[in-house]
Structure formats: C-alpha cells, structure tokens
Length: 363
Image 1 (cartoon, rainbow, N blue to C red):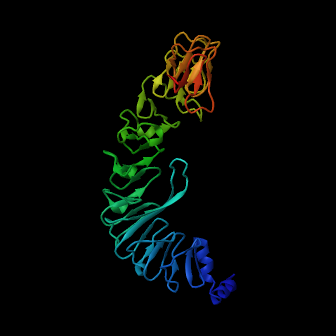
Image 2 (image 1 turned 90 degrees about the horizontal axis):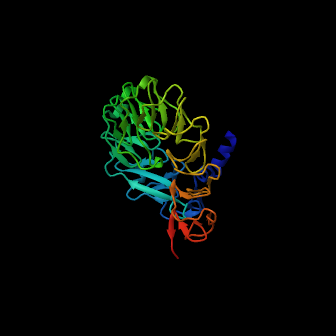
Image 3 (image 1 turned 30 degrees about the horizontal axis):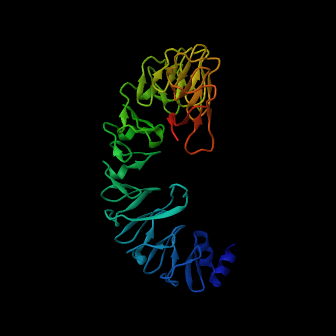
C-alpha cells in the first residue's frame, strides 16, 4: 500500500484521490467540487481540509462555495461545521429543507460576527466557545463557567455551577450533579425538572421543577410518565392518587395511557369511571370497558356498547349516534354515515350531509 501511495504521488494523482473522497477534485489544471468548476480557485495552492472545507492561498470554501472575506492562507477547518481564519469565524451546514414538496438539501453559511477568532474552539459537534461565551451552531449564549461547560444529550448542558436547557440556565440547578434522563426529564441532587419539546404539542413556558419529586428515587417509566417512591407523574403533573409501586405506562407504544393496581389514567387525568378489569383501548383515543365507551378520559353518555365502532380520523358511531373526537354530531345519520376517500373538500358523509373535520359543510 505504501508503494502505491508513493507511485500516486510521483504521478501527481495523490491529491486527486483524496479530493474525490470529499467531493473536491483537481484535474487538468482546474479545481472542481462534484463536477462544478471553482473558477476562482488556485490550482497550485489548493488544499482539501476535510469532507466539506478546502482552501487555496486566497480563498476558503465550504462544499465548493467561496466563503466571503475569508483569508485562505490562515483558514482552518475545525470540524465539518466550523471554520475560521485569523480574524473571522464561520458556521456552515448542509440541511434538509422540509418545505411542502421540497426535500432537497441546502447549504447555510453564516459569518459569526461576535465570535473571537483567536480563542474560538470547538467543544463538540455543533457546540463551541471563545473567551466570551459558548455557541450552539451560530447562536451565542452565556454560561457561568466557560472552562467547565459541556453539552449533554438532547437540548441540555452543564458547567460546574448550573445546568442548562435550550441554552438557558436552569434556575436553582446544581451543575456538578446535573444529569439528563430523557429529552424531557432531567435532575440534579436536589431537584427534578421537566421541559417539553415542540414534538410534544403546545410547549410549556421554560423548564418546570417538579416540586414533589425526590431525585434519588425518581425513575422515568415511559415517554411522559415517571415515578418516585411516593408519587407518579405525567410530564410536570403529580398524580396524587396513583400508586407508584404498581404504576406503569400502558405499553411501549401507547404513551398517553397508564395504569396502577386500581385505576386507569389518560395523561394526567384519572378515569374514575373506568373498570380496570375490562378496560380496552380503541383507535383515536377511544376506549371501552364493560359498562361504557370513553373518549380520552371522558365517558360518552348513552353510547351503545354492542354497536360502537371507531371509523378513522376521530370519527366513530354506534346504532344511535355519530361522534367526532368524542362529541356527538347532531343530525348525522349513523346508518348511512361513512368516511369519504380521495376528496379534498370532505372526509365523511351520510345520505343527508357532508362533513370535514367534524363540521357539516355545504356545497
């Protein structure tokens, strides 16, 4: 193998091999990035720095794009996102654009005007710091102790003073003992904390301390459920009537229901009327036991157990009524009510009316 590299170097092919691996290529006196010619690049001084960054004696490049005002002679790639020269710092990314019908990748190049190039260094992946502050991607944020700051899983970090969530200090937290449990839960030696994500629905404001939780015995038992020796929790809600010893999320896939030795719960609500022995989950947040039908934690009055059927998209019906997300659709005809497919203007209909998202519509 060593003799092959020597031969390639003699033939002037060594740079060609290494460039191709990164997408950059030099051939016939010109420089290319994925077959796009970099016309301003200097062939003689061109150097590939890593998978995405390159430079010549005058310019620096990210995925073949020249970085405006960057000094090629002093430019260094710090990782696949950060690069800097003697005076400027750049954050770059190649990201998926999830706009409607567009899943193409796009390049982002940001000049970090507030970053101090001389002291700027990467901590981990998309975290960095300089002598003044820390950075996540291109966003600067203050920390109590620059020297000890470290990113943790998900959206968290810590230093020797405090814990951080979403780049903000968690009031009253103890940095040295701060630990991340899940994307939502974290704790230190004194407190337990909950913070929602965008994927969880409408976010809570900031991070919430669970006042009744005991850190030493606190255990996450599901996506949003947790227990300690005394209590059970849903997100930041304490479930005072729950038995923590027997409390369990319904199963690995059903994250909105839980049960203990005596009761059924929908999120933080105890379904007081539910018969635990016969309780059974149905699609779309409907459920049924030997005595009643439920939508989330609420029983549906006068529903007919023997004929109750969940359709889809929040619709259900029995022999007497049609329901949408647990509410009765007045004047809907259950005998003829059915879902409508491949129609943008309506999703269900009976012989009298059409419906869209549970609302009767007119044509």
